[in-house]
Each structure stands twice: as C-alpha cells, then as structure tokens.
Length: 162
Image (cartoon, rainbow, N blue to C red; front, top):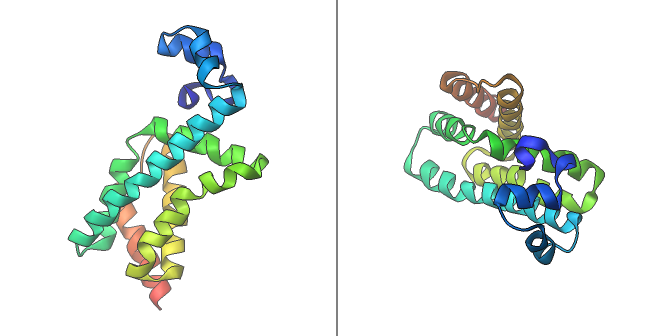
C-alpha cells in the first residue's frame, strides 16, 4: 500500500481494507500508526538488503563484474513497488533520524559487498550510480539498459583504479 499511495496515506482502515480483515486486527498488532509504518518500512529495508546475499553468490560465480552487476540491477529494478517503498523510507529518514539505520541497509550492504572486489572508492561510486539508476527508473518508468548499466559500472570501476 505504501508503494501505491505513499506513507502519508497509510491508515489502519486502508490497510485493513487491502488485507480484507477487520480494522481491529490491524490495531491489535500495531498499537498506533507509527508502529505499523515503522514495521512496513523495516520489512521493506531488510528484505531488500537480503537480496545482497543472492548478489554475493552471483558475483562469486561470475568473473565479469560489470555485466553481472548490470544484470542483477536490471532484475532488481523490475520490482517497482519495492523501490517506491524504499524511496518513501529514504525520505522519511531525512526527517526521522531513527530510520537512518534502516535506510542505510541497502547502500552500506552494497558497498560492503563490492569493496573486496573493486576497492572502497569504486564500491561507493558504483553504489551511488545504482541509486541514481533506481531513481531514473522510478521517475521515467524506464530502467537503464543492460549496456548502459554495464558501461557505467565499468567506467566507475576503471576510474577509481587509476
């Protein structure tokens, strides 16, 4: 629901209607709207960060980092609802410092995954590039092509090595 309507539209009544359950069941599990919102954002952040485990295995099995990372990113970007929800988390974290730890799970995890392979500077540059690619896909409705992603990653890795 957050992905479709945004955090500002989250209510016990709307969640209950979407889940087809009585409103009382949402208030039973979530004492207030803040608790429900925080649980939803935590779920989005942690499940997204878990994807990095799959990425680690894929990168371990493939020598061509730019092409593999481009493919993984393109696959990851197909879940628009996930990225809308995560962007709601990122915006909320700018106003609520207690959400910053959750908001940093993905970028910090991506840098930690890439750093042993390409170094810290390149890992940070690639993470920022992929964040931008995510925003581009959300705003335009068109993810970057595999070629553009792979080329951008390769250039960032090469530029940081020199």
